[in-house]
Amino acid sequence: MSAARRSPLDPPVGLLATPLETALESALEAVRMPPAGAALAGWRGGPPRADRPGRPPRPAAAAESGPPRAAGDRPARAHSTVPPAPPPADAEALIAPLWRRAQAGDDAAYREALQAIARRLRGYLRRRLVGQPDEVEDLLQETLLALHLQRGSFDPAVPVTAWVLAIARHKLVDHWRRHGRQGAQHQRLDEVDELALGHVDGQPGEARRDLGRLLQALPDAQRRAIELTKLGGWSVAEAAQQAGVSETALKVQVHRGLKRLAAWVRGGAPGEPTAPRPRGAADGPDPAAAGGKRGGRWA
Amino acid sequence: MNTDELIALLARQAGPAPVGEARRRLLPVLAGGAALSVALALGGLGAIPAALWAWPAPWVKLAYGAALAAVGAALLLRLARPVARLGGPLAALAAVLAAMALLGAWALAAAAPGAARSAWLGHSALLCPAAVLGLGLPALAGLMWALRGLAPTRPAAAGAAAGLLAGALGALGYALACTELGLAFVALWYSLGVALSAALGALLGPRLLRW
Image (tube, rainbow over all chains, first blue to last red; front, side, top):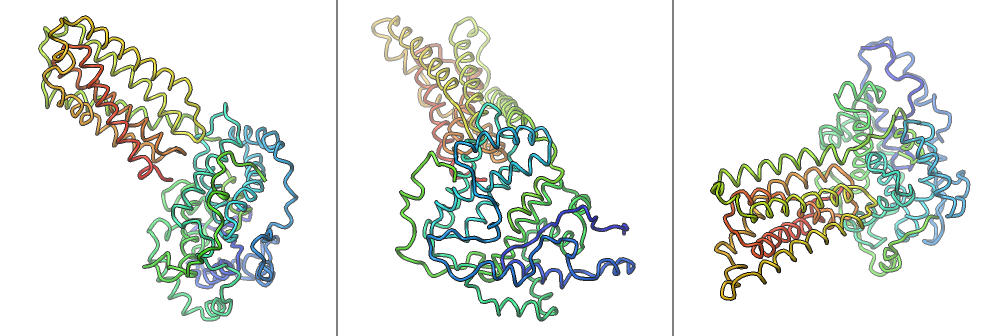
């Protein structure tokens, strides 16, 4: 067993933002496998994740979602600190130089470019998922993941924004095909009974059993990725090496696995990952208004 | 996972973007598909007698198949990426089809008055499109598989381009086994086989090319 299992330089593998996912994460922390080397217990003890000052404690995270909002409101979520997006015309001018450097291998520029893209895509998706505010971040992350996986498909002759929008539109269409366009199919995270989640926190034995069961239901690669990074406490690089996959692949597996776990906790047993929700009849967005514009604009 | 952290995770040690992935995935499949089509045509249908190579028809078939394959590959390489600009390859496709149609019409006009019907029907009019389509199927399957690892955002168009390329490879293979000598026959029935293959690709695209 190597000495440093998670280097301080490693960014969090999966900080979770929503109350439900935070609960999931703490449940995972609670059942984390005991380290084989007892010497590690010392520095791995202490308050979980104390090395990440930026992370809001759980009550704050819960408070963030705030009171129920009207559908038209712009949800503040965790991103209220993000400065407002510059006008649309600037998007290409801002992102293109960053993106060029990112494609050449500049990680800092890549990060900045993804952040700028995320700010604008959030607005783009929000306007097209009017009845489903909770889907916006999900789809945004799906899109960012797709951008990352397909960054080799970027053609320097094409504007970055056009490339990004083509992928975002593809993901949006895919989302509609899977879920339909009605907004009220999904229970808002804000409305999930927090007491039911606290129950998971309070009884580690039960949590261990339930999570174990859920983990077993995950595809092998995802389960292993989560076990290594979340339960085993390995860094991404170490876990990737152990699993014999690339770091990118491991990141994707952790992301997908956590999403699936969250969906199961939210929606029911693994056997029925997409448990049917009461269908709202008429409160979805007008499909023509929401999806008909092919030449979408930035926020 | 919140979005900022996902971004941090993705950007960390991301390195330079991979270059030329579409080429790297598609070109070996293209080569394999062409080889399979030729092997199936020679092995399953039998090569044409050597004397036939003295006629223009086998060469025209080969050239037509190769030209369509080149255009199809150009279209496919572009449609494998999110923002595809198709003007050039589409113009080339129109030029190739027009050239073959002109050749066919010229051959038909030059045929003896009573022979027009046999000039365009030949003796294997129904076998030809089926053979072109069938010989291209392995290539179509391989190209669809390769496309699934790329980023086509217009699945029907990308599928059609894959079908066009696969059909062209089928035509290349079938040219080695087809004993028809009429150019009007080639213009009509080879084109129909390639068109069927493209249509099949367009149907399969939206079903198979999700990512």
